[in-house]
Every structure is written in C-alpha cells, then in structure tokens.
Image (cartoon, rainbow, N blue to C red):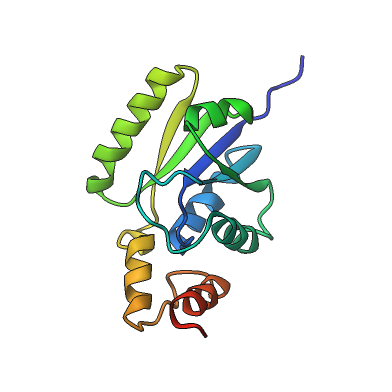
Length: 165
C-alpha cells in the first residue's frame, strides 16, 4: 500500500504577498509533501489593490525557488477547493491573539462543512508579528520604504501600481 501524499493548502488574498506569508510557506515545506498556495478570487467584498492574475504572478515569482510548492487561484468554498486538490489540511498563520478569534471561527465552519479537513495554525515568526498586507499597502501609499516587509520584486509591483513607476 502506498502512503498518501500530505498536501496542505495555504489560502489567502495575498494582496500583496509579504515576507510573513513566505515565512509560513517556508516552514510548511518540510512538514508536507506539497504546499499549495491558494489565492482567493473571492475576497468577501474587500477591495484588492491587485487583480487575481497579478497576485498569482507575484506569488509565482516569490516562490519560484521553493521546492514542493504550487500557486493556484480558487473561487468558492475553501473546503470544496481543498477536497478538489486532494489536500488533507489547511494552514493558517497567526500573528497575534487578535487573529485567533477570526481564524478559530473559520476553522470551525470549515470543520463543519468537511469534517475530514484539519486546520493547522502556525505562529508567525516574531519578526513579522506586526506585518500585514494592509499595513504594507498603507506604508507604500504614504511613500514609505517596504524593504524587509515584502520581496524586492513585489515592492517594485506595488510602486508601479501606486505611483506609476
């Protein structure tokens, strides 16, 4: 009998991808056989700076040298997508206690929708506790330096989008 591959889905809007997101991916790689980074088309009504194609492209570029990773986009229920790709788990990063309530609620709903899918929480590296895509966009909009927050290529895309550089 063959062992089933351990596949995890790391979902998010990734608008834009940050070094905190990549930290979670890097730490998931040794644990799973495949890490699927799933860019959500549906954002719950919150507007995005980047299109789904742009967000997917930024992640493809940011993870091009990461083994065992794939970048996909998806629409609809996360649990349906997880089932479709044959994953057993969802991984979510937690920055602070304030993230936990929302993530716990989502994990509980997902478990109710599909009891066979486990949600795993990974604490963000302390270097990135403060970091979010929203903070990155705010800093960029105010002309701040994004070094140490996002990959260099992503910083160029943000500046191009916001300032026409």
